[in-house]
Length: 42
Picture 1 (tube, rainbow, N blue to C red):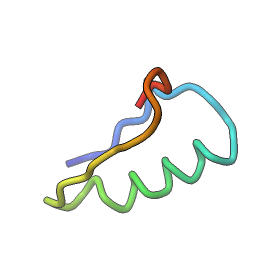
Picture 2: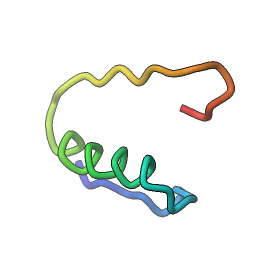
Picture 3: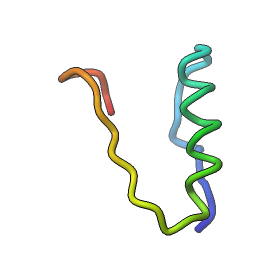
Picture 4: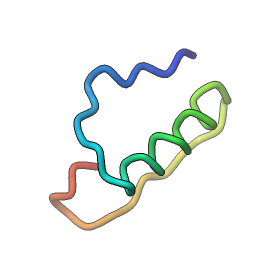
């Protein structure tokens, strides 16, 4: 699977960390659970 970030918007340090983790997980068959408060755009 190729990581496609063309629809991502933002430049915060937090988003950069999320994208770094996504780049590591995307090519695997691992299941990922994204958690967070309601309305945060997970």
